[in-house]
Length: 430
Image (cartoon, one colour):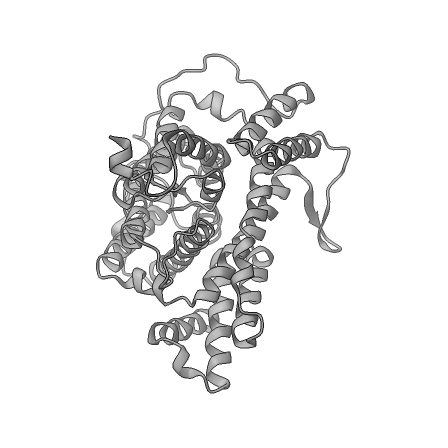
């Protein structure tokens, strides 16, 4: 049944590969189950309830991706967007968390409409082929950077912004051990190399005090959603601040999701000869549904996770990978102590290695044509340096439009790209 529904043979994969890919993706993104409640609870929301909302919204959105889009991408409340929700909208601007949830709910509704009318699909298809290749490479550097931060290998520095962490840290050596194990297994072409590396790192971290074994019962019922579910505040829907907050959520989520879908799909050779991603509309519906339902449950914007690349690197090619991720999130609802014990240092090697895998599409870029290579370079470099997939895409697409325009090649730019360029400039100045 699984073979027929997901067309595994047509996608040159099998059930075992898809399951391993799904577990690998889940392990690299399971940190959201601990991080999201920690961030959103700073607004006064119930931390335990947020854990349940985080897991449930991930299950629902990823199921849509698995069963309708049939693509190997996983979704959950997005990092960055949750920080904007908590630290900007609630703490800095002084609005209630109910106001912020309402903005997320409205964002989900707008996304459903934009997707239904093919607006988001048109944006994905309008991105030039070389920019699509560079998005994959940029995301690779971005997630490798995240992995190095999680390992403590790269830390903040007032003098140079970033610097090498203390090599005496146990966290670094746990990550380096996992990096070595995964690297050797990859070289030997062992299936599940990244997942084995994660578990090896987690086990090594126990005697070093990096991995903390759960206390008490491993199995427990999920905390109640009652304190946060459906707690909307529509009294300020028509204020200027609501418009600003809503547009910010829309912009960041739109281009984070588009960038992730294009970048990971390009690495998996899912982009067709016309530069399009099959079933992209269904994929975009998944995060629109996830964001809408997630706000009802009581969490911030749901988006496609860049960590999906780790599952793709393990051979995941169909919705069976994302179905596995959804199943793991469902299990995590009842086994949260067990899943949350895996430290960031143990998943860091997978992110670093996946970052290296995602650089390969850069070889498809035409570096002889500067109107193509400069936008590609800016896309790649701005993602890790601005710590944003969306900003990398903005700089790449703006430079593409201007270089083509001022070199007389304006006919090579689509109408959608011109419209996007105007919107990007408006965002910068207003």
